[in-house]
Length: 308
Image 1 (spheres, one colour):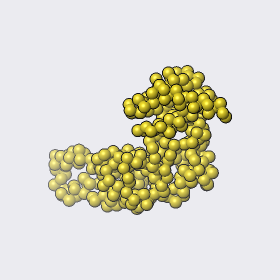
Image 2: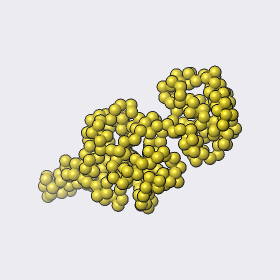
Image 3: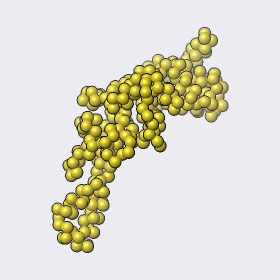
Image 4: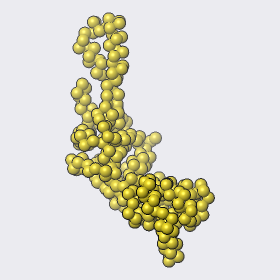
């Protein structure tokens, strides 16, 4: 993976993302361009399945940088996100020193200093991302930050502000090349303003029909034009319903792939009902979209197609 130059403009950003089949709107491309130019973290918030995580993967491929991912979860702490000491190896070193008599020769202080040297340090995602030994700045994806507990955000501030982590036994570790940081949130809770202030913010919403059709054309090229058009129109109308969780672009792509494997040429009530679980992930939503509702939506899709 070779290091590539940063985009030279918003249009260049759009074009390079599209080359890798990421169809962004201009506002997102503007935020990406500025985040890269200003070396600011990019904070992406929005519904699940709208391409927030994918932007980090695409940037990694576009710029030829390694991708380091920190998947957030409840209870995530310093040892899971940044570093921890390899206590097993440290115990082995102590026992080896005792067995060989090296502990007495070195003295307690020298042995303690050796035990807390870098060779006993296990580097997690955050420390890997700011490692001064990195030849190029990696892309750091802090995914689903809203899943982590609020105290974890306080620790992130040092990383996002100073590009460093302070390890009590070693001192501060500071990046020579600040990583390209993408933070995502599905907004299951609010992220603290102190984190947001250090980032460029963008809300990633559902795409309009034209952009979703282009995404589908690139990601599922085997789907016929008629089928792809009906899929996009149906999903767009499905998102107007009062559902617990609306289908994202990821679900649209997965549904199109499934229908392609079933050799579908167009949508009909039976095939929609039998594959609805690819679009909707809650039983209450599936029950809401019953046979009559599916037929009503399909009628609207056909009327729309006839009017074009």
